[in-house]
Image (cartoon, rainbow, N blue to C red; front, side, top):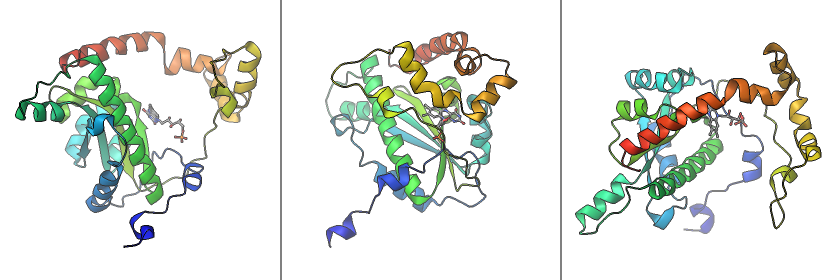
Length: 257
Ligand SMILES: Cc1cc2nc3c(=O)[nH]c(=O)nc-3n(C[C@H](O)[C@H](O)[C@H](O)COP(=O)(O)O)c2cc1C
């Protein structure tokens, strides 16, 4: 078999330059065959010690989507998407393997959660890239870590398994405009970290702050600056502190701390 047959052609510029989150899906089915192929291919991603410290729960049934939806603050994609994937940091399987092979596992600690969460997120992003190549639409749901206990209960996740990411997946029924990005100089630091002056902040956030839609957000929410939309409405100190406590309690229950 020639090399060109073994390796798929992949043009990251073509795919990444047009990628966007998709929140509306057509009724067309996402076949198990396609999904299983992509989930297998995504497992080529790098992981700690090649242990693959992740698991994916595939949700297709209406009943299970109904159960997951409240955990995601009823974001409509959960019930509308043909498939919902919950990607978990998973030290359970490795721990079980050790137990079955006369090896003493020591993975019920926070470092192990961090390692498994990194593996799970790397796998998630690789899967996203592969779905982009196929033209599949998806949206990442950060709400996964806001009320994790509801997800744990619905999906019957055992100890040392913690949900870290959710993807709603389907064939796109929308083509939203591309979102803005900060310029590269704003996040790349040569040799050492260069902290931000007032002028830097003005320069790097100028475009974002002056987008029509963002000006509109400020207007309708009666906010003076775009940053206040984040601090006062979208991601507030009060919510962040409350959900941090919940997250830590859940990590404790799942045996990671
Ligand atoms: C950690 C994380 C959490 C996110 N959570 C949500 C979410 O709960 N709901 C949603 O509609 N989009 C969510 N998104 C998608 C982002 O809103 C989106 O990626 C961002 O606005 C940039 O838009 P784009 O993906 O279309 O380029 C999330 C993305 C990430 C990486």
